[in-house]
Amino acid sequence: MTKTQYYTATSIDGFIADENNSLDWLFESGSKEATSRDSRERFDTFFADVGAMAMGATTYEWVLDHDQLLDNPDAWRGYYGETPCWVFTHRRLPPVPGMDIRFVHGDVRAVHDQMASAAHGRNVWLVGGGDLVGQFADHGLLDEMLLAVAPVVLGSGAALLPRRIRAPALALRNVEQDGGFAFLTYQVTRTFQA
Image (cartoon, rainbow, N blue to C red; front, top):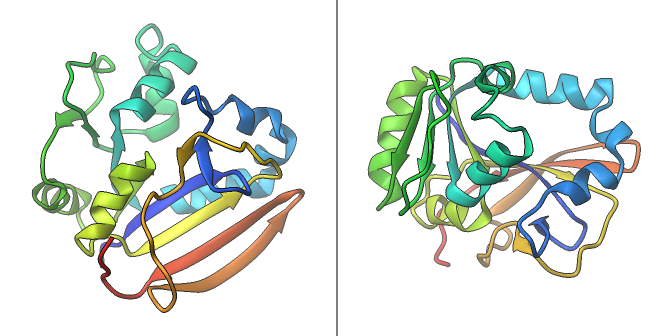
């Protein structure tokens, strides 16, 4: 059965990017821990079950720029294989050459149906940003949140999930430690109103 999962790193104070929409803080906050064998195996195990993924325009642009993917499209394949990716945007953005990237906008429900169909029974990964994931959650389309909590406090930036969600909507299912990082898995157990 297809699950829709939000797998991301966050600061202790709940930001997924700093005030400049950068993730450099994550690599500076413990890159050895963030790229440890356990962390890599955790991500590889997660990604093996992913059949489709989605991200917002800001996340997509950061990944393009940070890894220079327009000049090196094979790096995208190295990260995500042939997994189709939906990018939510209202602007024209360049596609990574040769990759299955679909630019969309509007109501997430119709796009979610397309992603779930393309996933062929595997899971849908919501990469980020937080507001985009919130739109899926608003419509009861978010099943799990998998959070790598980094040992850093940013003070401001892009919120993890700019919505109010409380227990019993979130049920903690797993806690693991990898160096200074805490890995938390929450099941989203019911729909809610933002």
